[in-house]
Image (cartoon, rainbow, N blue to C red; front, side, top):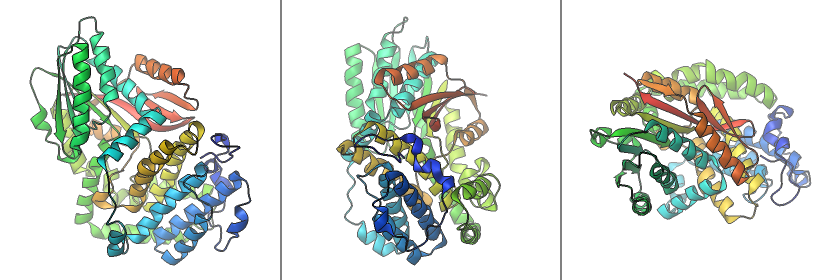
Length: 474
């Protein structure tokens, strides 16, 4: 997050408080003079906020609700959903921690949320705003479309299964590119999958309209269901060359595996929580830099918690995901392109997810801080209704309710190879087109990286999203 803010909409990313983790003690001490902190520089305020945020999360993880409440009180004097990037992210992370605490009293939590209304139109709007304000989805679509064009060269009947169908702009661009093919456009069928019928109705209208303008034979097949309930075999049709597109959606299937694990081995989960509480008690005197090195890295690699209690992280212990990927493989796709968040928000413990989420969403808040005025209503909607809800889901939810189970590309590679897929190197043309998009739109601070045939969409040097391509392999 931008730690030094000189005026509305300007920031210094290089002084981001999250980049200064190693300078801080983990425990700020209850009773710190927060009224005086209002007078300090945004940079110092950001450092104090991180102290409070991590200290509070440790207390929540350990079940120390009263002490956590004291931290929340101090954070409330410094955080703000319309302040600088650090103040904004603090507001949403503390809201997520508070929501997790309240879930300890299910009736109270239910009562406080009983009148909450989720509008489909609002969900569509906020996703579209993210598409407009940040280039990540645009880049993913450009790369995906280029890979599909290359894979489908010469094909006369093309079928695309869109596992997260909500943005017509992606396929409108593809229709225009197919029209320009030297051999002429193919007959195109797109199967759009979404839980909301309204979303698919809008997709069908926009794409059919565009196909008619371009005189391309086209059919849109809407499938209203959750991804984990999708009957893939019913989508099979002979004579078609199949491509599959999944943009920021495949990770949701992991929730079903977590729920299965919880039902079959509750003792492992209890043991994990107990050992984590003991570890929390010994963390508070370390600097945060030491904690990240000595606690987070081992948790990812070889701790008993992550090895035994966190089945979603183990490729061979994910039956639902394994079954879903095997079903995709069974459709014999010529190409499958997957875009996922490049972060580990599916860790075994709260603190694993919390720290990774701070880094990941800190960068996303930085993106908006650098390009969108603070008073922008559109920015506030994206931060609250998209980022804020994802943060809350990662931190406050467990089991089948925790859908935002982002994982890094290395785990997806293992899963997809186990399911029988072979990796396809994305072409230089895709990278070139994505780079031209960034340049033409003036997106400063955004970068693209290529590694082993996969692309990473970055904010400065931090990868935030990965794009990889796969094919059916016998």
